[in-house]
Length: 212
Ligand SMILES: [Ca+2]
Ligand SMILES: [Ca+2]
Image 1 (cartoon, rainbow, N blue to C red):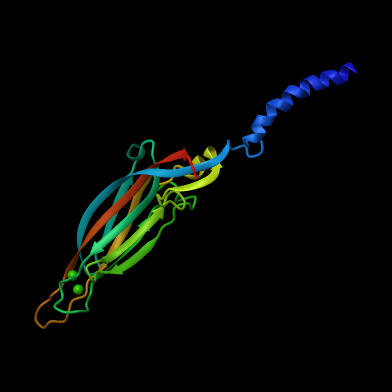
Image 2 (image 1 turned 60 degrees about the horizontal axis):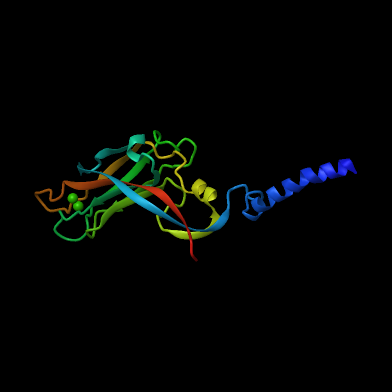
């Protein structure tokens, strides 16, 4: 009888201490209280721009350096390489110049693990909107759009971060193709100017209780 009472006295407080934790999902999920949360992102962007005039077959290496100081306490959402050109050197349609680009992210955190992969793209310089854009989501599936979710704050924070990826030197090699209309006695198009923009979006996650 004595042993039974002792066991009860020990179990009793444990049982009641455990109950509220179970209600809040601490015991089952282990990831903090579940709830309806509105998740949004305060963004800022870092831009690096340069331009290059290239002749047919010329290459240009462009680099964008991201240091720890550049992002501070923020997370990297995405990095874009935007190359723009507008070939209006030829007298009529056709003979449009074009450009291709291939990245070299060997020196970027996350590349060796396969989380940030090299990409290539190309585009013609026609129509006033020529060139190409390459985008990398440094945070998986990052869009910057806010949303509501039933989850825990801990799970949300663990999802929305860059994992330390994206630091380093982002590099790409551009190669120009210049085509000239065959006008006798002169070369009407010998080169093309390319505007190069690296755009990095960094963010802080804001998690507030949703009224929905
Ligand atoms: Ca041309
Ligand atoms: Ca041109």
